[in-house]
Image (cartoon, rainbow, N blue to C red; front, side):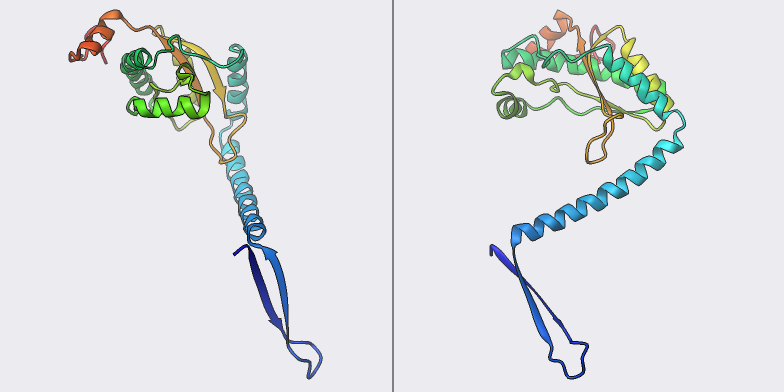
Amino acid sequence: PRWATISGMEKGKMAGAMPYTLEVRAPVHSILRHDLHSKVCKYEQVYSVVREYLVRSEHDYDHFVAEMQEVTAERPDNGPLRQHLTDAHLLYQQACACHLLLQQEIRTIAQAVGGTSLLPQVKKIHRVLEKSSLCYEGHVDRVLDIARAAIEVNTIEQMRRTVELVLSSPRMRVVRVKDRFAHPTAGGWSDLQINVEIDVEPQLLAALETGETIRSGSSGGG
């Protein structure tokens, strides 16, 4: 129903007073919106308290955030990033090769800092096409997370060391840094997103195209 009825019954304070019913009619969507807003406000209050506690417990947090803002400023956002290829088939082929190299680099860095490497599979081709259609008006070169990986750490010092190793990696060139520690999402998520470029050797592309097995330790393998 579009409308909901809220009823209540209360006895009058005067002796012998008759009970009465107060009926309030309001749109269902208004009631739900108010209830949702109330819950969101309570969540944000709880989140703010927890976040403040965590930030205070990490004495170097503010310094780390300032450092990351400097790193971000060194790579200004000059408009949307684009892949070098616009053909979906060729882009996906290169992304698969990059994925192997990226995972190898991320695994090495995670081990060096004592973190955990999170290595999902390459994004499925139908998801790539879906994202390019829904988010980028069919421009597949705007999809930047076909090859992806992450490092999970527990301390500020581990995060700082992770960023240092990514920035100094000879195999990866950082092209953009998104800092969400200074500006966490409404849901409370904080992270550092780094877009990198990786040079893919021709023999690796050829191996992928012909379906050859890429062994660990071979040129460009992972």
